[in-house]
Length: 109
Length: 114
Image (cartoon, each protein chain N blue to C red):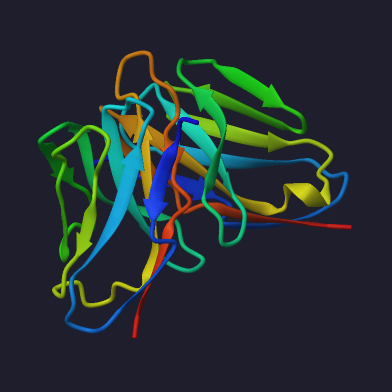
């Protein structure tokens, strides 16, 4: 059974600081996604990672995938308040897509 | 515009009633999903469908039913057997093919039992 674990579940950061969110999963898969959710809203796609060693960057966010370690990371550089949201990773195994519990990020001035 | 549409946005149900949540997509996607999200929690998979006339149970299928008679549509029925249905329900779709893209989500339906 595919299980996806994220940590930390809650993250409070100062503006300008760096931090990494981790996503571990239990079964071999080469399809991993990162999403952002603002309170009361739906999910917005951030990154699609489809192969071992894949790295993608958008603004202050960078995501990577290590399929051998079954690990993806979402790195935040020089955080700003606008990044406050909940971030989810999701792993796709033959169209059975499971989500981590989410990391609730709060960026404080 | 291509996209995925859920309706209604808000839904109130009396105890003992069945209600159906609509999900329609015009992205020509093969795979569709239903997730439940409780306040402050992650997403839990209810059902998913990889192709028309086929669907599989997710982690929390009890008390729910689905159908996939058309590629564009994947309605979810919350039955009276679901004892705690108050939650935010999200529908998603993806290509389901090897040239995978991410899943796209609808705006969600907030269901409340009154």
